[in-house]
Length: 115
Image (cartoon, rainbow, N blue to C red):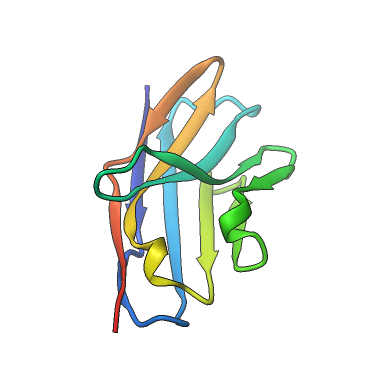
């Protein structure tokens, strides 16, 4: 079993920045993928960015050039640096951990971009 603890959400003005963190604990196999998804009201959950244990990354087109995903394998922690935030980035952000064909999810953290 894997547990995920997220932090770093909040309220920010358009153009501002936030950094999300997600720490995984439990039995962690070295080959895994960590990532962030988001879900806005009335919309489906969508991939924001993900990173493998070998540091291969991919991003949603809507966040390319603004968001950066990174990880610290020693701490089993993934980060999402979000810059140039827009109102349309407002959503609940969920940490995702994939390992051995199974997905684990964090509880979600609210990100609100508003003036």
